[in-house]
Image 1 (tube, rainbow, N blue to C red):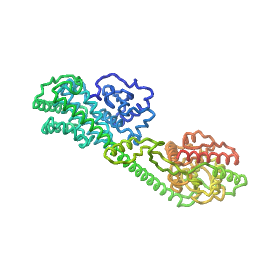
Image 2 (cartoon, rainbow, N blue to C red):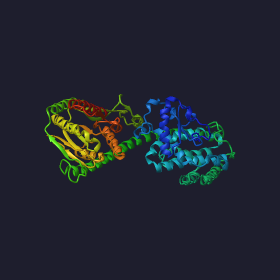
Image 3 (cartoon, one colour):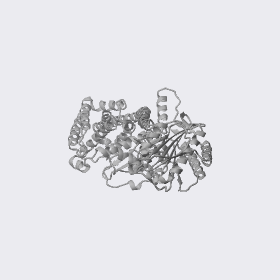
Image 4 (cartoon, rainbow, N blue to C red):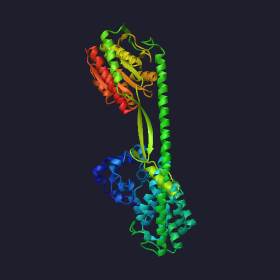
Length: 607
């Protein structure tokens, strides 16, 4: 086999630096499908000897990918991350070749040296023929979604393998090899029987239906072999194969061949044998090339449909997951908000209302300042429309080109639209939805006065821009101080005696009441806390902030005092404002307004 290397010399370090990124992707993908972690990739022009699109070297655990064949000479920058499923459909032949080699790495675990010593050269070649469809049959059962990729690459691999065969060895042996490499793949599921119908006609005309039936029985039994670390059972089948091929050769009057002839020593089709064999072999090669073209077109069409189906299924799955999460959060919100505002007797917190007063003049002025800044925030709610076109710009869909050519060859005149792009529109002046979380653990006790003022300022600012706000306090328990749509009339100061912080429950309560993650309009989460949490709550806080970023929710974290812990949580997920003890109300308002505007603008751009 031209794509299985029996040498021990490593080549991965020879990868051209420009291809290192692609090589890493190929290595990761191969390891994922092979269920291993030790495989490295050598990627570039001419890798693997320049015959097959890819090859695998068991001795060094290396996969090689010839970019000229697998990627049709593409540049490294043109190949997106192949570990992303959507990108795999852009390069079906390459992905099929990589998957094939990953299957060798996963299932061809028997010792090659032992097999070479136990078998004649002819028997060993028969073993490698049988192994091709065996691993692909297993792969189609294990990962059926990749069968289309195998179909796109299989006959390219076969043609490469056949070019290295001993074409002068006699028609019977060549036809048997072709049957193992093509017809057996149709039974394995990596090719369709229609793909190899023309090849089957040539092989059956040469060998006879009875011989092909005997060979088929052998490769079907080989495909049932599941002891991947021992090829002893396959040795028996390889010997049977050689006996059936010998029977066919004798029937055709072909001279007896040396069973220990070196594999791949032939010089090409027609190098030996009579002229009749030469003509049949040429007919076989022509049938292989025709089949490769038909299989490539068929695979492209089927993969296009498969991608659409997978995308719909993934979208449905995500929607179901989002709906389930939102329903869970709504249940938590209903339990918490249903008890009224302020700490209830059963809310587990020790926090109590300390002061309730009317806002001062500077505090009202601060609310006006923040409202103006929020009004000017350059947030726009996005609307996306996918557009397909004949000409650039956009992302090239190679499948559409192949599909258009296939339809044209069948007399269907239709204009291919190979370029795809997403056009985004923005809704002006969206409703601003604000959710506020306030920490009432003991470490925040000194900051409860500025926190209470900040909470009122944000509530009043949102009222002035005709938005919606909700506010939740959290410590050992969780309780609301402002229901969605309500207005906080007074500045309320609560005590902060609690020994821990239930951030996870607080966020679920707030999201369940405001639908921040999947709602419409501009959405802003404000957290007032020093971020000094237990390990679990810190982990959940990071996760929810990252999800807010993914869903286009602006995040503003106001840290009272030392921001060491808050920095660790917020990271790149939002805006962090540090407000040391003694910061004046006007300064607090200015910092809050500017940071909130930045958070909203940043969320709008990233969404």
